[in-house]
Length: 429
Ligand code: SR1
Ligand code: MG
Image 1 (cartoon, rainbow, N blue to C red):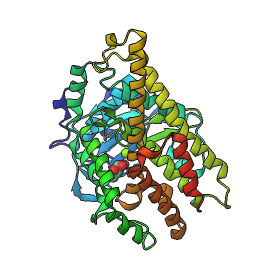
Image 2 (cartoon, rainbow, N blue to C red; image 1 turned 120 degrees about the vertical axis):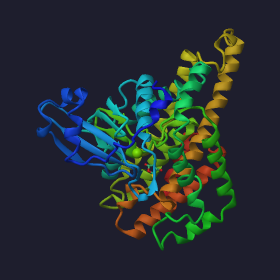
Image 3 (tube, rainbow, N blue to C red; image 1 turned 30 degrees about the vertical axis):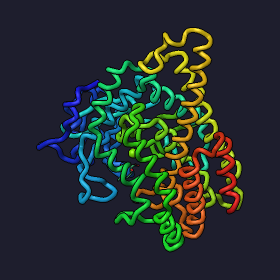
């Protein structure tokens, strides 16, 4: 892992790239020219970034293509009134390298990290599409649950105290500890702003005015959301991706990859699992706006629901399997559990641990659902529904269910109970 001092990105020579300036700049890097082939004047550069923060370019050469992601010194969604450090490209690169070591082949390959221009050059994934777009269009991705459960189990387990020696984990934590500004975005946008009159909040109005106001006065919800925030701030369990929603997944019918870990830091594992499940629930509850005839997406709803249950079931089984077979970290010292009785006690402890992780997952899922409807950054699942009444009806169901997941997370007996709650919420449509 790169020394933390390398996190200094940008500087006097930093400049945001354009479709005209990028190719001549990249021509100086042999890693890039080898992949693209030909000469830089023949490369075709297109800016395709539609995310909230960065510039993203596809660079096509004679021989191959690459993705270039460059950090801007401000939040793209808002503009230069909201400055943001360039070193997020460093954290993204480090996270991709760490994730690839834990779960090989599930993230794009890093070709080059250029600290001066805060840009990372990566493998171009094709013909992959952003999964969120697929969820809106009713596309099934057969490898989704198996890949995401493997990715989360491996990347979370192998950066935790269950696997790493304490000194190595602390060394890795020291690197990602500096990703404070990106964490701060989450602390405000996910856990706090939806529950106060923050300037940049917006929602489908006037349809949701009442519930936005209601949530700001909802003591139990605010206390529960802040309890989740405290976990986010203080539970450095593993290297979490930090923004694991369906927009951070690219997929085809045979392949699934996880992209964009610029929010990575050592935090609670349930934050990743919850982000994923929360976004699947949003996808489910937004289907009302994407079906051509009433019920036209019912089969697709069943598919999404199965991904929710499969992802948790496969993830939790794989995580415990890894713990049982590769649990060589400083937590639960393996030599203490060699006899049958001790192993049985360990199995009981593992079950308790997974139950706590399940409850964290639900709490974080609920927070993520609420922030995408009442906060600054929304999701296309709902935003692309032109009929505001229809959109708001789905959003309201998502808000009610999100609240239930945050406040009453301990009452859900299983992931099947969560799935049943999703179906029940949607039954009022
Ligand atoms: C100001 S950034 C808003 C959101 O975009 C990213 O995708 C993260 O989800 C962040 O919270
Ligand atoms: Mg992102």
